[in-house]
Image 1: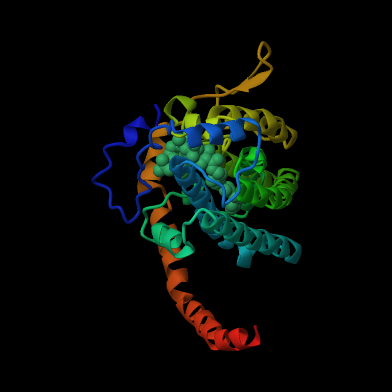
Image 2: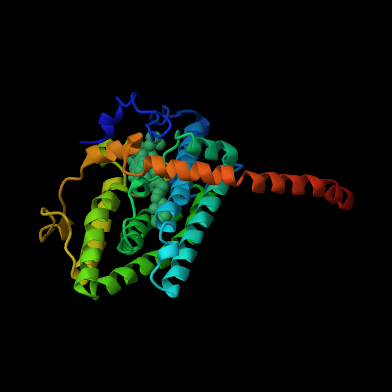
Length: 340
Ligand code: FAQ
């Protein structure tokens, strides 16, 4: 089942809902739009001051801001374990990783600002529950092995999806993604190393690694989005070369890359249908529970409420910092003008 079932969600409070927007607007057939498409087809980069169709701008603001929100909300499940990391080395690496995610969010908000969306407006959409962020961050981190599984699987999925975004047609997004992907690959290694240590440890540690894989596998596959048949934005985004691959093709690449890694760890995947297809050279996998995906997007995942409550609290607690920064800027503005 695809996302088409997400329509009748009116009963869910918008406060926690990541409800669906309407699809991208109708194709612009003007001469300017045709010239724009020719530039895209010729692999030219689009920069902030260039003319662009309104639907292209809206699509980018939507995707980049959802991506930024994902990075910021994505700090929460792992932040939960910073104080309980088992060693100083693990703590330092996790702290650095979570800090990187905050940085990624900021580059991405800055990229969205080049399209005319203000940071305040985007943050407001997140805090009021009107904006989406990745479904994956609505699942809980129950034990230390979850930190390994997030690095290995969630960052692994993020890299698979984001490497092609380094070639996105919109310059500021593509350039932000180059740096983000470099950092994500460190994150993935950090997670795989935790999983390796646990998988080679005591039977209890190996069981923790297996349990974490069991819980994070299917939600990681959902990160790639609805199946192509239900992906409302893919056609336009592929035409504009914002997306270079469809949701299903990236999901398949991720499964092909990750299954041998799990087997190397001596772990099994929670999917009885998973098998190597000799004819296609790919790993075939079972049906994703799209109903669960729909519920998480509708605000009914295990941690949606908790995540938004934590972001709101952080925003309120940070009010004095924003006020102080503005007061400082005001105080120094006349001096800067006089010096100019
Ligand atoms: N969760 O028509 P499509 C990370 C929404 S960063 C929630 O296929 P599209 C780093 C979609 O937005 C992870 N919503 O849409 C990290 C759309 O909603 P709308 C985030 C989802 O845009 C690691 C609707 O469903 N990565 O993990 C999801 O063509 C560890 C219809 O879908 C990015 O954002 C989902 N899983 O393709 C941080 C990458 N999937 O706007 C901390 C950039 C779909 O109509 C720790 N984004 N939706 O209301 C993309 O590549 C694309 O936006 C897709 C979706 C592929 C996510």
